[in-house]
Length: 190
Ligand SMILES: [Zn+2]
Image 1 (cartoon, rainbow, N blue to C red):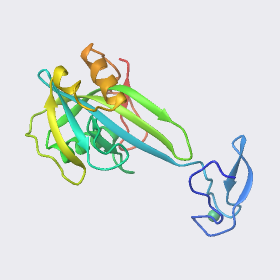
Image 2 (image 1 turned 90 degrees about the vertical axis):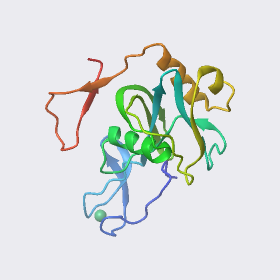
Image 3 (image 1 turned 60 degrees about the vertical axis):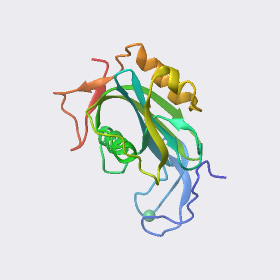
Image 4 (image 1 turned 30 degrees about the vertical axis):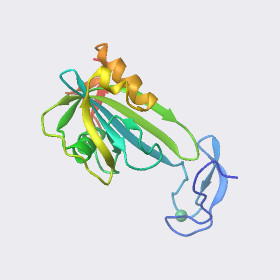
């Protein structure tokens, strides 16, 4: 029984039958004919906390899971996209608001048949007017503390919004460090 959401019988690269032998300290599905190793399945999500004055940007989910719940805007990172570009893109697509990352506030790590990681950014508001994308969200808005506490809001969203109130510096973009990879950037404590 595989621990992964997808079980391969044949190599997805070359079609050869896979074997179960030890690779890097553990039995893993791998191909005796080419270099394929089934390392696992991962998805990377992002969310962003955007303040405009004393109001925070929230979206109401148009689909399940969590249909009808209010959350911070966000979505999934594409294969060939910087994580910080993904959160700016998702916020703009869902709400019409322009924003850029100021720091990383939180990481939710959820291992499972599909290993799901979700990074929360504190964003800088760059303007733009509210315009909901109806295929993704059923409503959007900027809300004061009194207002958003009345909403049916996801626990993680509420937690990061309230943490962002207490001037959490988080991890900030670091420049001038040489990194491997065309799109690579680094966030660090200083
Ligand atoms: Zn193969």
